[in-house]
Figure 1 (cartoon, rainbow, N blue to C red):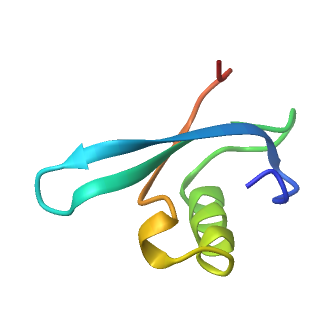
Figure 2: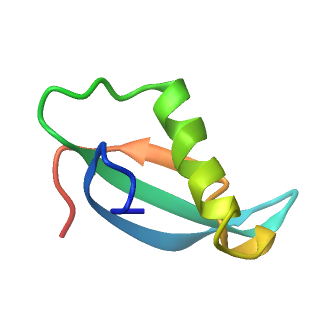
Figure 3: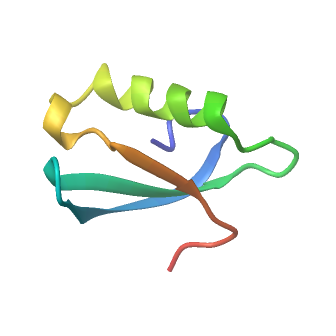
Length: 68
């Protein structure tokens, strides 16, 4: 995901979804001055889908101020 120009850092983990089962959840810190929102989340998921199997791409994206 850091290959997306707007992403400064990221982490991902598995989230248990009652409908879908295990789902990848991504926490993303954006570059300074970049607006986080639905469009950027879609770009990130789309980027991942071009490089990963569907089940490995994030189903959820959260924008956070820092990741551990």
